[in-house]
Image (cartoon, rainbow, N blue to C red):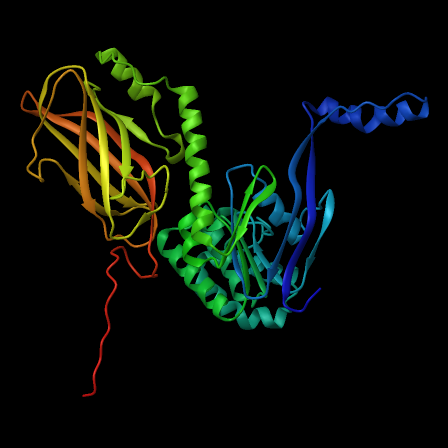
Length: 437
C-alpha cells in the first residue's frame, strides 16, 4: 500500500443472518449438518440482510472525510469493519497507522472500573505504553472535565460524562487516524465546540479523520471530501462537499415527502374543525420530534421556503447566508378569526434562539375567514453556516385571552451555508484594508 494511503477499502460486503426466533438459530446450528450426513439438501432457517455491498474507496493521509447516509444505510457497519471490531463477509480493508475510534457510547469501557482505570485500559487497547498514558493523563482529565468523577466507577456516569471521557482518551493519545461515529451528538454544545476545536488541531497536524454524522452542517464545516452511502452502497464520493450534501438532502426530502404522502391524504376543501384537528394530529414531522398543539380552529397547514430566484428549498435544500428567503405559509381556518398572530423563529439545532418575528411586529394585521389563505414572510438572514430548526406558531386574542391555534415546534429543519467559515451565529464577513502608518 502506498505510503500516502491511510485506509484502503476494497470490495467490502457484509451480510447478516436474521433469525425470526432463537429456535430457528438452534435449527440452523444442528439440522443442516444432519441433512448433509443423510444426503438431504440442507435448508436455511434465516434470511440474509445485506448491510454493505461491494464498497470501495481510499483515504489518503491528512484527509478529513465525512460519511453521510440515512439510518440503516450501513455507515456504522463500515466503520466497525475498518476498526476491526467486525469482520466483513467479502473484500478487505488495509489500515496504515494507529486508529483511535469513538464508535459508540462507552465502547471499550469496563463499567465496574473507575474513569481513571478505564483511561489506562483504553491506552493499552490503543497500544500506548503505561508510561506514555501517565504523561498524558493530566491532559485527558482536563479535556474530559468530569472532576472528581474520574475516580468513580463509569457505571455511575451520565451519557454526557461517558462521551466526554471516551473522546478525551481518543483525541489525546496522538492518533494517526481518528474515527468518530455520531457519538459527539450526546455532549452539550460547549463540549461539542471543544471537540471540534481539537479535531481542527488534529487536522492541522495531518491526522486522517473519518467522521459519520447526521449533521451535514458539520460535514460542510470540516470535511475535505464526502462519501454518501445508501442501501449499503457508495452512491457519491466527491471533494465537492456542497454538491454531495445537496444531493443527499434532496433525497431525504423526497423520501419524507413519499412517507408523508402515504400517511397523510392531500389537503381537502373541507375546513371543518374536525378535519383541521385530524390534520393537526396526523401531520407531524417525526424526523425532528415536532411537538404540535392548539385548538385547531385554524392551523398552519403547510410551510414552503423559496429563494429570490423562485427555487424552492426542496429543490436546493441548503440556504446561503445573507440571501433573501421567502417563507410561504398556507393557513386553513374553520371560522372567522380576527387579531391573528403568525410567528416564526429559528433556533440552533442544539438549542438557543437565533432569530424570530411575526406579522404583528411587521404591522400587517391578519384576519382569517373559513377556507385557506396564503401569507408570505420575506427576510434576509445573515446566519452562519450550520444546522437550524424553524418553529412556527399561530394564535389569536379570543375573549380577551390569548388562544393557541396551532403551535409547531419545530416544524422544519434548515441548513445554512456560507463560502467563508466564521465563529458565532451572525454571518457578517469583514473587509480588511490597511496602509502605512
